[in-house]
Amino acid sequence: MKKLFLLITVSILWSLTSLSQEKLNINIQKSTIKWIGEYTFYFGGHNGFINFKEGYFIKQNTVITGGEFIIDMNSITNTDIEEQKGKDGLVDHLKNEDFFDVKKYPFGKLVITKVDYVDKTNARLEANLTLKGITKSINFRAEFNYQEKELQTRFKIDRKRWNVNYESKFKDGAISDAIGFEVSIKL
Image 1 (cartoon, rainbow, N blue to C red):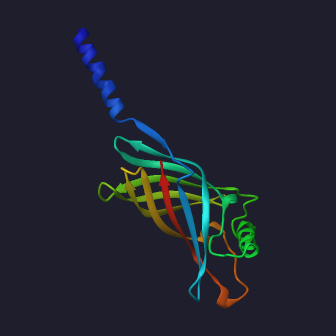
Image 2: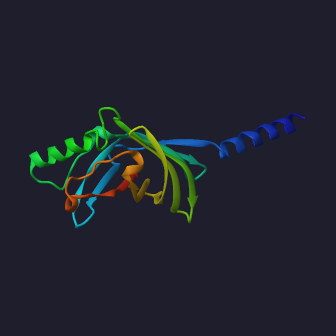
């Protein structure tokens, strides 16, 4: 009877361990979010970076099944303008109320809600993105490099879904409603 009890206990503990979730904190110094904004009627635009404040993946067994990431909207930078005055002017404009309103909404958030693997390293992710206090679902493809402990993805969002409603006063200077992101997350 004791052997049977011990066998059942060990079996239960083993099954709970194999189904357990692990929280994997990201390395915010090595992880990057590049943003890309383009003009509507001609080639060109601006780009820069935004930093993660914190974040983690949820790992179950050997695969990533979720995660949550906080984005520091005050960290937005510009990398394509060389003149410091122009660079500072654009960054201040992006932090303003008609773009990201970072005084009122200093953080963005992305929560991975579903991961559908195409193969061992490629997946389609569903997530909830919160900007300016508005949460909308998005989906995108991502590639996991388990050896390098890294996720890479590229996707675009329609900024107007999050009330990022800036309209240029000049038709030929209009900016696209799409904002592109190139993301590299490392552990």
